[in-house]
Image 1 (cartoon, helix red, strand yellow):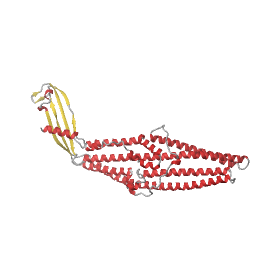
Image 2: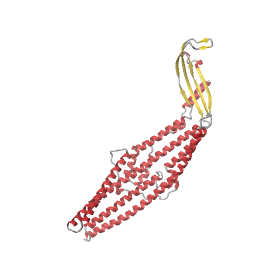
Image 3: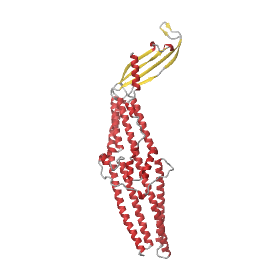
Image 4: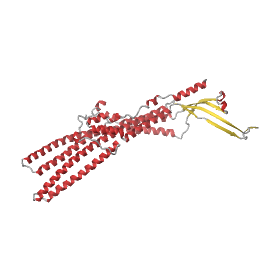
Length: 458
């Protein structure tokens, strides 16, 4: 009866599904919240949003980040298994051929041959008196949390970098449009100056200067084409599509977010993935330090074995063939060459290092957020000033056209005014895109939180 009770106990301990294992069965596929689509929709750019959703589905870095999480979930389950009893079956079927040389005193055993049927169930369980295995599992859980925050950081970085390149591509498109207009205008200027030179109204130096300006504008256009093509290829890599065209908005339809808060509490860094990673790392190493201390304590292993052992197949299931043994195996290392002491010191040094990294991460986070705020404010101010300057230059251009209409200005005067207006327009385009990108940089610095709701989350 006792043997039957032991069998039931062994099976129950081994087959019971742990609560932790069930908890980890949650799907890891749905990470759309990491994309923070609500924030990107504030740019009122449908093409940007659609591209980001495509990036979410196709990007290989995001897929690898998700796999890293799953790998560490499996590692946690492996470690948790060490907290449970282990039940194994290892049968043995042998045939022994003994010679007649075996002898017990004056009695000699004749040669013989026999079978041995050995079918045991073996159970072993390390009694976690000091909580060592539990601490190791907690350490692995914190390692998993670090990987999860690394995955979130990957999402923030990739979406931010993609959006920055996306807006830079729109800037290149607009620059090419303005550059073509500048080249056309400069060609007209060269034509007019050439006519003046032909009738002796200007010097050869004036004509050469305008021709040189035309070549300069063409060289600049080539650089814009190169930048556009590079950006297109870069965005295709993000989207994991080497052939599809990059759908994008027109510059005139871009909306610059307004009313973004200009002051944040320093506690906003608590949302950053690197801060949360350092917190988890400190906890992880703290568990490792405790494990290193408990390595000096004795271990207790409960072991048991039940099964059948017979020399003849027809007696295998007889009561005489039943076997059973059980016991407790205490063990302690009396001498390990200083390995355990060195391990404890190592863990303590790692803990101090983690504390230093934690403090540095706080300072780095504050610095990046402050730098992002300064960049955003400066970019916004510069854009506002460039808009004013563009309006003034537009008035100058309109006045020059009016003077031309009444005969008070020449065609060249109008062309020069138009060229000046186009150059200022390029500055306005550059400043607007820079201002847009500065909001993305600030979003990235605060840890991927909607900037309009950031003070609500603190």
